[in-house]
Image 1 (cartoon, rainbow, N blue to C red):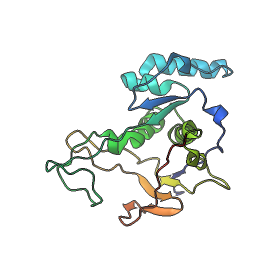
Image 2: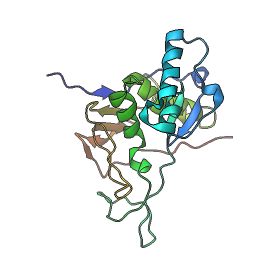
Image 3: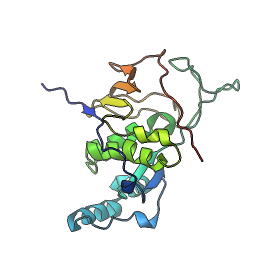
Image 4: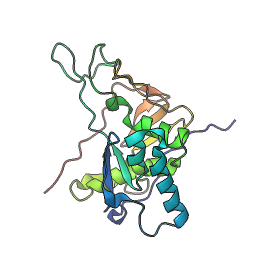
Length: 213
């Protein structure tokens, strides 16, 4: 049987596609101007309006995600321990850490809900919302973002390979740092960080995107 996995592919950066995007943080956004964009077909506008009315079964989160070009993002709260320490490079993380489940589950929860469970988005649309659009929002203030969110000559080799039938969040309020499942491979700047579903604890290829004024 063919291995059903999804690889993130997107368009090269073009700020015109993101000038009116809204930022969705943990499902709470939005702005009235994010209603169905002008130029979309009546059928597509009706589909978005239908999703808004139904709320995709998830209240405010579903309504916010139904806006065209709403961006998926999270502030990813730090993990705190009772001894006052925070964050850690130890893996698995030491028990007893406290944070919000969104730290570990924002993106996988969105993929599960919006693509697999509801069919509201295609996989291409999901990667556009989770990768391409967030990067385009930063283009003007953090030039290094211009290499993010797309594949091609000149782009950063940031790649994710996931199992579309299995990707999901599993973090809870009682176990908020539990890592999501279903990600098979992850490369950052061409360096493997997850291989065959296992985190490579000695890989730290990420670099900060710093703003320039």
